[in-house]
Length: 126
Image (cartoon, rainbow, N blue to C red; front, side):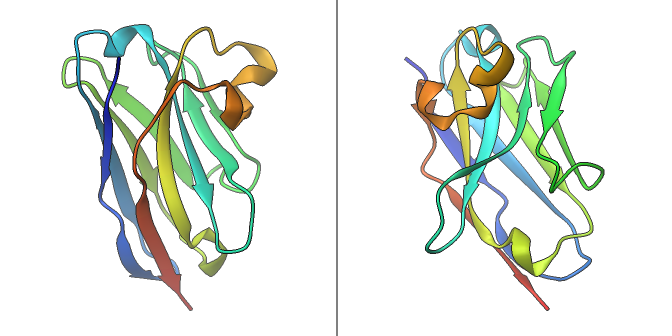
């Protein structure tokens, strides 16, 4: 079992940056593909970014491509989401998730992930 704890959210002005962290418990972190999702008020949870177990492959939603970067440090059991050029429409609760064998379209589907953090609020003011 994996427990995930996000941190790093907050209030930032449009154009600013934040780095989210997701710390995982257990010695099996390196065996999981990791993803970041977000949910804005009144909207469904949506895919933001994903990273393979080794960190060698990354995937992004079109809405964040070129602005967000996902990375991981398996020695520290942590996955990161660097968010630059933030926009008001990026305002949401951000969740990290862990899943096994997240190939192809599976990595974009929140119902395919096995473990979730509690979420961290990101608010971007205009």
